[in-house]
Image (cartoon, rainbow, N blue to C red):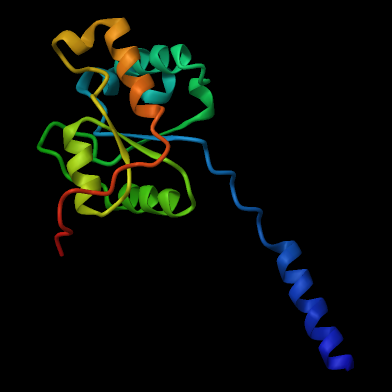
Length: 160
């Protein structure tokens, strides 16, 4: 009986010493990589500048606080091709497994997440050209996509 009490006390002590899990943001926006201009200005999507401004404005129009969501890029910064950042991709997978809704920004990110079999919603990239670039049009698009409660399953088969 005394051994059982000691074992339970040791388990309780180890649980108390374990760091608390970080809260999962309500949404995770996954982008490609920072543009050359963003790297020069040392800004990211979370700063709300450049393409981030378009996204932040659309989130505010939906009633969401842009500082309450998470932002992550899955490609390595640079100008030579799009190389997946496997650490970032694994982090996205972990966040999705923890229940965070994942939102892909653009086709390239959508394809990468689909290949990795990460459930996600798909938005047009906030720096896209064409009619979607109009502020109200993009805000309506973001509202329509974020109103979906369950993301669609990936459409591409997993590549090993």
